Length: 285
Ligand code: GUN
Image (cartoon, rainbow, N blue to C red; front, side, top):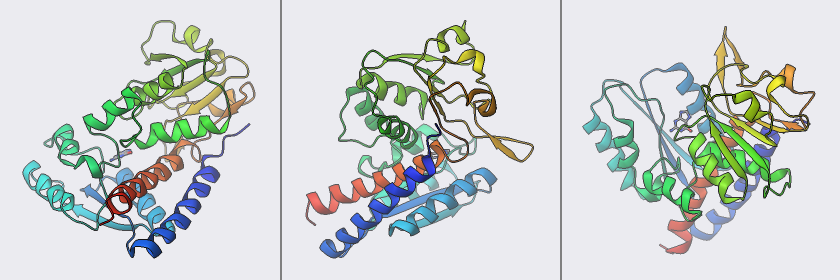
């Protein structure tokens, strides 16, 4: 069965649209998201465009800030500071990757913790480990968990294998799965006997950026496969899973495109609305 991330994300966006319209009536305000993009990276431009379009659909005010790729770290931090102090902006996202002269960690940490809707700051990543849902959960891991939740599986006693150990996906999604009681193994493309470990998995989450890496000899019959990869090969997009090869032996699988990708954007908007509610509805100012 195909897990339809596009449809699921559209339902989330529609619910957000209704909520935002109510908040507008109540407070006279709408959530605001600022997206900073440096230079001309084609893939980044496509991602940012999708984020802005989703904002328009839901009624979130979006502000796209395009900066020169040669901007200094200090100037970029100044731009972020301005947005940290801007009452109309609830969420700030700096599109990654950044040029090599800029320290990504320093930039992520410059964003106010209240506006870190990407969930990349140490404080928000730490809250995931602690199972504290007061912070912002990074968007792709949150989207993956949302899709798994839709399957109504009890994760206690289930073997989940995460392939990939990035700070953006592998590590946070593993923490979220551990918090749900799953027996969670984190591997990478160079793990010894990776196929043997994967073959025992009830759920596989793969995020390694290698097109069609996962083949059916590595997958247990009836397993759930979540494909986080977005790999461009000869102008076409492939996931980390050899979809055609694997699809007939699994119980559920996410397609690429149309699986995890749209969920990431939906969770970004959800986080932005959460930031708005914390500021405007809890503080009442
Ligand atoms: N580049 C690729 N994915 C992401 C993301 O989720 N957030 C940011 N800020 N940059 C990205």
